[in-house]
Length: 329
Image (cartoon, rainbow, N blue to C red; front, side):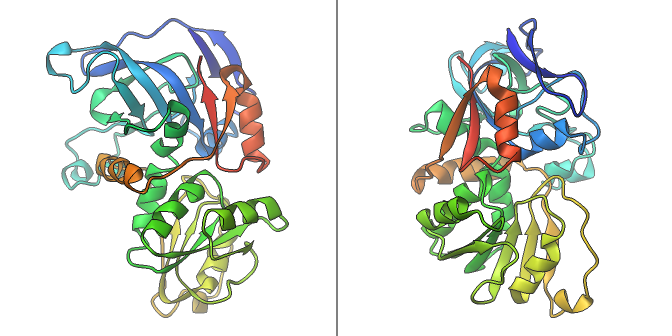
């Protein structure tokens, strides 16, 4: 099968011809049709996430069809079913976190496209317990961003609770999905982008943002909450200054640059600073049930599998409005 392989950090992916994997009991062999390109993939390539399985097939926003079932007698799926494979690939099922419904924090968790080969290939295997049925009405390419930008973005969004005025710092794949949820629920979104990113700000306004500007600007009024999607530690004190008393700032990324020191006064008055780690299967079920009700429409820029390096470069340079997706023909 064709695959794009990461052999070492800080090196380009290489096209390889790999054997088609065989599913073990409890696994599915998935014929990959589309795979979203995520900023986490960049963190892995750039060596900022330090425990990848190498060599590695990246990709954890996978949409495909079931080509083989490891144990037919008890599978939730049938041959030909369309499934999504997310970042959370497996957990131990018996630790404190798993038993308390916090499987996203499991110490024994394995992650797709990190410790498990992912979707930058024609086929992948996945634990069927962690796969999701894809909602009807979403073509493969448009469904792919729902599997991480949507799912982990949704978990971050839930952390803002009942906030009516929400700031999104970084308006990329996750933000362009979650703004649709916020508008559907009658909330107001304030979009913050890199200084001078007029295209990104216009994109945010087009999707319903009540205000869009530079991430270094204060919003026209205090926010109830903010989500930092950009992996920039310097945005933490910036966002804290933008939220009102009792407001919440959520750091949504798996990696962030160094957070600078900041005066206690920007955290005082019961402001809350928290992070989000991974996702749970409950998040996936909730979000994938909600998406067709809105309905969420994903904006995608499509690249062939062999252009995965170009897709990663475009994402790194901020040239993607919406999501980059690999089409696996």
